[in-house]
Length: 107
Length: 122
Picture 1 (tube, one colour):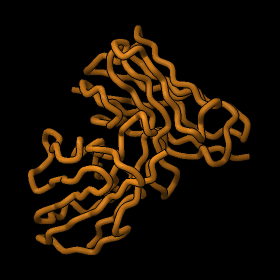
Picture 2 (picture 1 turned 180 degrees about the vertical axis):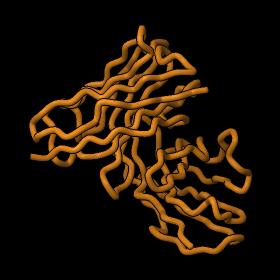
Picture 3 (picture 1 turned 45 degrees about the vertical axis):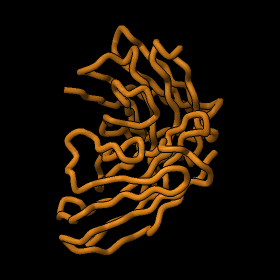
């Protein structure tokens, strides 16, 4: 299976900051990548799919980019509601579906 | 409105079995790709397995740690997905989420249930 890594594992930021989270795959996955946001005690929420497609209803301050083995999730101006844990997921089913370990965004 | 409601979790002894249910509403499970994802306490997300829709030959795939022990089933008449868990181990302790990509026939999850907790312990 493909291994996914995320950096940083924890990120301290303030409201209004531009935040970037990096996700790397152990081999090329094209653009078969999704990003999720999870808050404590809640189910994850899809933010981005196909590396850069914004899910309907997700604020435009979230954006995704990348292809192959390196991807980024960017929050252009961090809002109070954005403090959460973020996971990347590669979903090329031929290579096994795997999640990254998560990045916690805290104040 | 799309809704997924899991049930069936609980405390089970190592080696035991459990069947989780996921009742879907607002869409039809028959042609949707339906996935189970789990999360051990305080840990990250782990893909468990998926059944493709009828138009994609209902192919089922499992993650290596559960292959041969877990089975995904679907009852179209009840619009419900199931996860049969057998030969349970302590490391299977987790919240189990039912998810779907809805109209997207890919292995990412557009809609999630609230999860059901499975605890494997003696």
